[in-house]
Amino acid sequence: MQNFLNKIRIVWEDKNLRNRILFVVGALVVFRALAAIPIPGIDQIKLSGFLANNQFFGVLNVFSGGGLSKLSIIMLGVGPYITSSIIMQLLTIMVPRLKALYSDEGEIGRQKFTQYSRMITVPLALIQGFGLMILLERQGILSNLSLFDKAVNLVVVVAGSLLIMWIGELITEYGISNGVSLLIFAGIVASIPSNVNQLLFTFDAANIPLYLVFLAFSILIIAGVVLVSEAERPIPVTYAKRVRGTKTFGGVSTYLPLRLNQAGVIPIIFALSILLFPQMIATFLTGAHNIILVKIAAGLTYFVQNSFLYGATYFVLVVLFTYFYTAVTFDPHTMSTNLQKNGAFVPGIRPGEATSDYISRIVTRITLVGALFLGLIAILPLIMQSLTGIKTLAIGGTALLIVVSVVIDLIKKIEAQVSMREY
Image 1 (cartoon, rainbow, N blue to C red):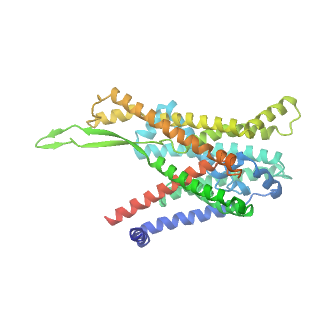
Image 2: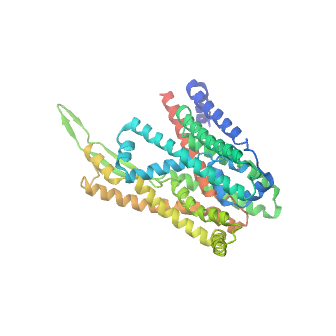
Image 3: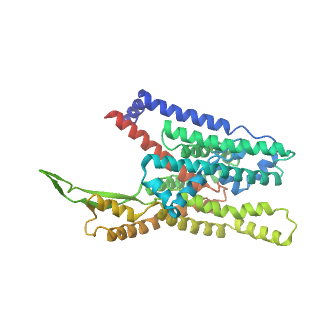
C-alpha cells in the first residue's frame, strides 16, 4: 500500500507526467461532451425501441464510444479508422511495398503507413455514414428531413469521426497509452452506470444468490483474461561468442517471449463484422413486398435469434480469425533471419529454416490455446444469458477484453514512466 501511495506521489509531483495524465482526462471529457450532442431530426422514442434489441447497433455503439445510442455527431466513432487500419494491415500481405514501408523503413515509414490509414478512413466514414442514415430513415428514426438536411447530417457525422480520430492520435502523442483504445474504453465504462441502474430497476431479492454467483464468476473471468493476456511462452536463445581484439562479446543466454494471445481482440472484431451482416441485411429487407426477399429476411432473422447456431458460428469464426491474424502479423521466417544475423540461435536447433519451422510449430500450438480462450470469451454473454436468464450485453466479451487490455497497458505505461523518474 505504501509503495502504491509513493508511486501516486511521484506521478503527481512530476510535472511532465502529471500534464500527460491531465491531458488524457481533458481529452476524454471533450469526447464525452461530443457524444452528448445529437444530430437533428431524431425521433427519440423510436430510437430507444430500435436500440433495445438490436445487436448490430450495440456493437457499433461500443466503437462510437456510446455516441450511437444518442445518434450524436460522433456516432461513427473510431469505427472507420479501425476498419482502415485493419485493411492496411491485410494489404501488407498482398503488397510487398507496404510491408517494407511498415517494417523496414523505421519511424518515417510508419508515419506514411498511418497517413494512408487516415486517407482510407474518409471514404469508409462516408460509406458507413450514408448506409447508417438510410437504415435509420427506413426505421422512421430520422424523418421529415430534406435532401440538404441529409447531406448536412452526413457531413457532420463524417467530420465527427475524423475529429475523434484526431483526438485519439493526440492522446497517443501527448498523453499515455493508445488513444483509440482509451476512447473505446471510455465509451464502455460510460455505459456501466446505465447498466447498473437497469439491474437495480429489475432487482429481485429472490435472485440474490444468483447475483452473488454471477459476481464471483465475473471476478474469476477477469482474472482469467488478465492471466491469458499476460501469458508468454519463452523460447531460449543463446548468442554466439565473438572475439574482437582482446574483448569477447556474446555468449549470453536469453529468451524470446511469444505471447499466448498475439491477436488481441482483433479476431472478435473480424468475426462480429461478418456475423452482423445477416442482421443488417434482414433489417434492410424488413417490409419488402417480394416473397423471396421476405423469406431471405426470415431465414437471416432465425439465424440471428437462434442462440446455439449463432454462438457456434461465432466461436468457430473467432478461432479461425485468430489463426489468420496471427499468421498476418507474426512471421517466423523474419524472426529466424534476425536471430541468425545477430549471431543468435535456439539451443539444439539449426539456424535458418529449421529455426523458422521450430518457432512456427510453437506458435501454432500456443495459438490454439489463445484462440479457444478468445472464442469462449466471445460467446460468454450468450452462455450467461442462457444460464441465468438475465439479458447481458451482446458484445460483453469484447468489452471485457478491451477494458482489461487497456487497463493493463495503462498501468504498464505509468509504471514505466515512474521507474524512469526514480532512476
